[in-house]
Image 1 (cartoon, chains in turn purple, green):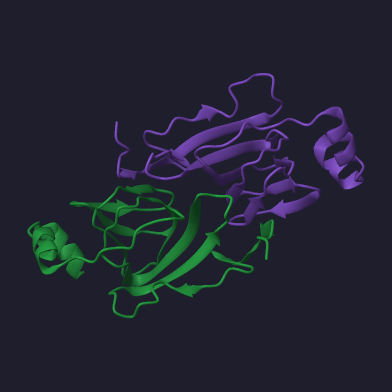
Image 2: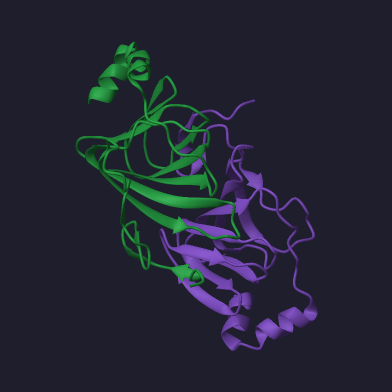
Length: 149
Length: 149
């Protein structure tokens, strides 16, 4: 079915004809309270645009991959880890995740965190951290606290 | 210079280190009161993400091209023409502009219209309508009124 030209918001950050999906289909991957909506997946476009929403206190999977992410926050606030750095993020902030940077997004305890993510249509599979990767990250006490929060 | 990881909003829908540019550099192309900000232009990503803002009463250029657009409204409201159809658009609505569809975005008289636009990094140049294209569009009285508004 060709993509409809116009999709209205059916509710805030929910769209007509866009399924609210599980974030990860593989149940072995750690995350908490995240939904995924694919907003644009058009063969004529080399990237997809997705909307992820992390519930209060939730977080995405800590992972890395060769492909880059281009992120814009569109709801709420939270924090993210990119590489070895932590950032407070709020409405309309932009986050660039370069190749092979460990990254995770966390909502605040009292608010959701919703963000758009642009990504190449053809891309490699995410890698999860091994024990030594976790130990290297946790050497920074701020990152250790972030990952445990 | 590598892209910074985090760019905060310096003001609503203005970002640190992102220039607010003229929409079109070529002064011969018709448009009214439009700015352009390139949010992500990363060689590792096959698409760019741009933010366009049309001032109250303003409009983008009526044009078409082989490349597709994936649009999300992020500020205000307005109307758009895509192909032979008109749509009222508001916050977070999605608009898909397929190949060779004539398209134009118009803000309302009393509010700006701001939208994200995802587009392939490599793309063809826009085409402007010739007199017979304009005549064909204007055969629909609603489209004629939209283009004259």
